[in-house]
Length: 321
Length: 297
Image 1 (cartoon, each protein chain N blue to C red):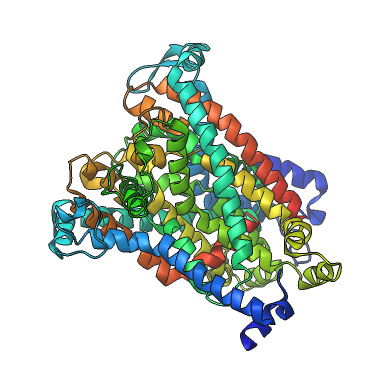
Image 2: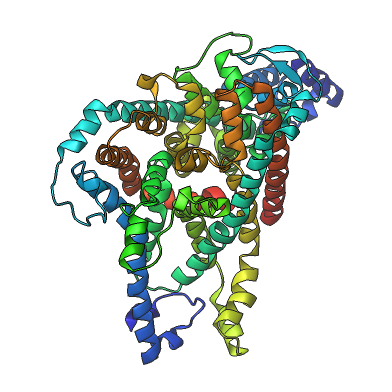
């Protein structure tokens, strides 16, 4: 790297070199200083570069390579396997179950986890009192250790009458439910989504509240003068004004829910077709030592989530300009 | 009336709210919302703490009792001593503090180099680091696990070592992004002046850049700490020794032992205390960090 630097400095002629931070001296930095600056720069970068290389850059490539290899029980390569891992994956009914669970989860979470925080934030923003109380409470579940929160909810969902939810339903003379042990798979996933929404919506609500506070009051004033009712004001002022945040949160939500793991692990243990894709990755690797299969699923997730996150970053960048 | 006045205009105007009927509706809705919020977000916590106080038979009683009839605080003592809750909390704190320190040292140094020292190919390094924002760590658990059991070049096994938590925490593109963007806003002239006074890059970072960066360092620290407390999948894979587990994986481990429900609830309550206290202490920074962190992140 130093050589590139030297030749570039020479080609430009030392006195006029303006690369690097502006030096207020009479002449540009000398060769020695520039080499030293680069060296110092990379010394400062070294720790982070090593960690990124080990835990981000190499694993991305490694995962794709692994998915095309025969791997033994401790994950060591025993030669190339072509598309074998992918063929196994596509022929594995568990894979398709997990795809369905992940998609249903993401879909239901879009209805609940995505819409609820926004509606809630729009409502909360109208209150002139107790704002701190609402903010504090809605964010409290976000701060709980996820496994502790999930066990608590699993207990609420206890299928007999000792469960809190069933006890309440019973008192109200309403039919009780088997909740997580229901035979209706989509309903079980819905129960997982409700827990997930409870525990994660705090961030969404707070972010929307901050965005809502940035909407100029005159816009509402003008809309009101034009005779727009409350719903029309939401539709014509609030939503257009928060459109960027809404789209960013949409992508963020999709990326987050497609990584759902703790819900499957704690609430249902993945039983009766309720394991998500990440849960299947975990199971394949830990229970069956099928690292190649895990890597194939991981690669699929990597591509799909990479696409959504890429869209998020692009949109965010555009929003900043 | 005055309560409605000093606010900026939102969806519903002050004039509208000041009408007698509207004001009555407002107060009814406000009280109702406070009640619902308390029920939805605070009651579950009450439930876990109070269930932890119940006797083994009362906790399974149907229908459940709202207030414990028999109060047995020794459930908490049992959870703490027999089920290693103290150890899990201590471990997690240790992992979180270490991860935080390493992130502060390496990510701050890297962001400073990328922002102010700008070595050759610095923007390539930056682009590669920011590109990792596109790939959530969850999808890389398998190759990362294989890295942890046999680190390339060094051939170390990091399983059950705190390094398995600390090192991956440094590879955080979001930290680099936030820190570099903040450092970019520090005027070049300040550093040039320091350089004329003979301050080297490390000295300039320490005495000029860092003191100015307190807000962003706060954000990075809070998110770095919380991330370790909330992670489940990664510690589940790399911390398999029960004496090395975090709060989350420890709880998973202890339910395998057929633990009584009242002790489980006491354990969940104890396990939740550190993060709740952390939240109450740092609530302002957490909430403002959330908006600086994610709105433009």
